[in-house]
Structures are given as structure tokens and as C-alpha cells.
Amino acid sequence: MIRYRSLTVAMMVGLGAISGCSTASSRLDPLAATAPSPYRLDAGDEVRISVGGLDAITNTYVIGDTGVVSLPMLSPIQVAGRTVAEMQDAIAQQIRARQLVNEPNVQAQVIKYRPFFILGEVQRPGQYAYVPGMSVLNAVSIAGGYTFRAQRKYAAISRRAGDRTVEGRATPNTPVLPGDTVTIDESWF
Image (cartoon, rainbow, N blue to C red):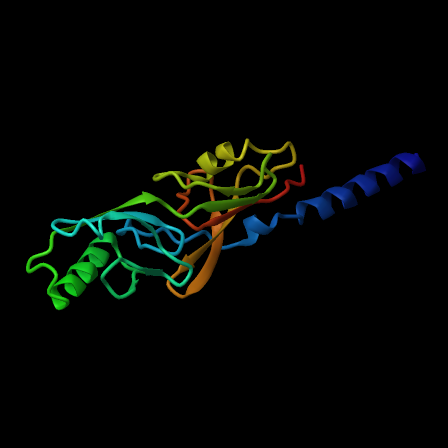
């Protein structure tokens, strides 16, 4: 009888201790839902730029670590934090200022987005190419799926917001953006 009570007490204490356990991602505030906004360029993005009448500029460029793109015949242009349209305007402004073309027709598009990173309880953690419109679940799939220990309900996402980094809790359907770091925690059960 004493043995039975001891076992019951031990189980109650154990369950009480476990119920207080939570993963790091479940303690984070939910990642702020933001309205879709135009994509902002950053280091590592690859862009295709074409300028009518200036074949020397038409090419594919990778935005450098400092957020600058260097085009022939023009000064380096700071493009990190700008939209594609804002980059097109900045290029056109330099072309006009140098009197290379009176009314430049500048076209640009993102060819390859900077990668996202996934860490923790996935089969193949690491750096992967971003796919537009992807979610946490897509990112996990790209990384080979969850491990058997993975916490599947929540993840943590760390992302740049202007000049600072924010971290928040994400569900499997939360969008992943270029440059994000997704962390899948270990589940207690």
C-alpha cells in the first residue's frame, strides 16, 4: 500500500513538473501579422537590370554585402531597403544626370532571392533558396521534414525589420521571407 502511494505521489509530481515545461518558441509572442508590402531588396538578392539603349548596363547583378549594386558607367547605387521600382528610379536618375539617355527605360526584376535558414529539429538544417509564397511548413519540407523530436505546433522566426531584428512565434502556415531564420524546437513529448 505504501509502495502504491509513493508511486502515485511520484507520478503526480512528475506530471506537475512536465506540465510547466514549454518550448522556447511557444514562449515567444506571435510574429506580427503584416499586410503584404512590396518586396525590399537586400544583400544577396540577384537582379536582372535592362536599360533600353544602354546594352553595357543590361545584365544580372548580385547586391553586395553593403547593399550596393555597381553598374557600368554609373556610380555605385545603394539599393538595400528599396523596392524594385525605387531601384529602377534611382538608376534612371543617374543615367539622366550623366546625360547617357534623355528618357531612360529601366526595367528590373528579382531573379534570385536571398536564402532563408532553418535550424533545429529538421532532417537537414541549413541554408536554402527562397521560394516566393512559402510558409514554415514549406521550409520544413525543403529541409527534409521534421525529426521525430520536433515541436510541430510552433516555430520561431527571426527576421530583419529595417535596422533591427525581430523574433516571434510562428505556426506552420506563417509566411517565410527571404533572409528569415526559422528554428524548429524539440518537443517534450
